[in-house]
Image (cartoon, rainbow, N blue to C red; front, side, top):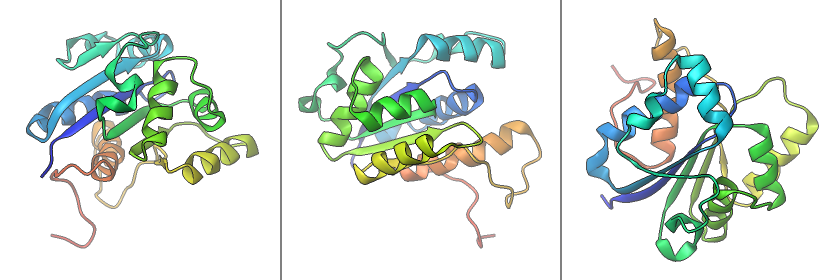
Length: 188
């Protein structure tokens, strides 16, 4: 298996638990990566602290980048990153990506991933959806991105909020091409 260079972005949508579980899982899958870059919006840090009650995002050993650091390697296609995951992805971030607006490192990196025809996964987190949201999802999908709504599944019979959120993260991990143990429908 080819090792991956991955960008993880966390935006200010509700759902910090998804980001935490994703970062935990990627930490455990480090043998499948060359490099993981992490960028968080200011709102993401506030939501994380509010929803999870801590600032543990700073404890991860991934290389961290400020949202305005356009010298980050993944701000250019020449750096060779092959996957970007935005989890959770706010509707504002989705809209800027769909419109091609690169006003911060998150949207610039997404633009680079799309132009290089690499894998962009957006774990969008909002409900209900209006037509603007749906059209933005359509535009990103037509550009090659993958919309993976943060909608948990129940067929694995999750018993805790953590297990429920993990159903979404396991799907993201699969979409990103990582080999990972998770519940599989129809398998014992």
